[in-house]
Image (cartoon, rainbow, N blue to C red; front, side):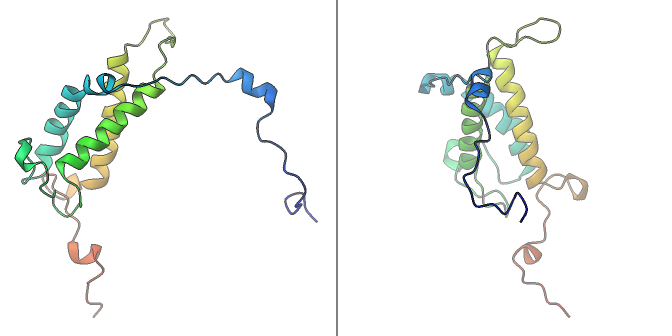
Length: 149
């Protein structure tokens, strides 16, 4: 019988002593913390999302228009980016110093986090090598409605 087949008591992955080494500080976020970054979220939507779909618009009355065959709307993407602002603010460490001893501003950290998240999302939703940026997946193939003749 191998050591992995044992159904005896499972040891803890992290010892109590190791927990003291990894301090976890959780920040309490308020609405003001998140709404402070709404202009940044809007700029990412304008610069990265609206230019990739013909039907996308930053007008409030068109926030619920579906973006191609992605199943997302501008309102959905805005909510996703606000969630990522929360994640960035929770992960921000004001005590962090670079190798050169410089500090990182909160807004710079949030900007970098959003840049990575919107880039990751747009790579998944668009196929830039196959067109001008509009999601080019064949809808019949996506819905498995292709004749196999």
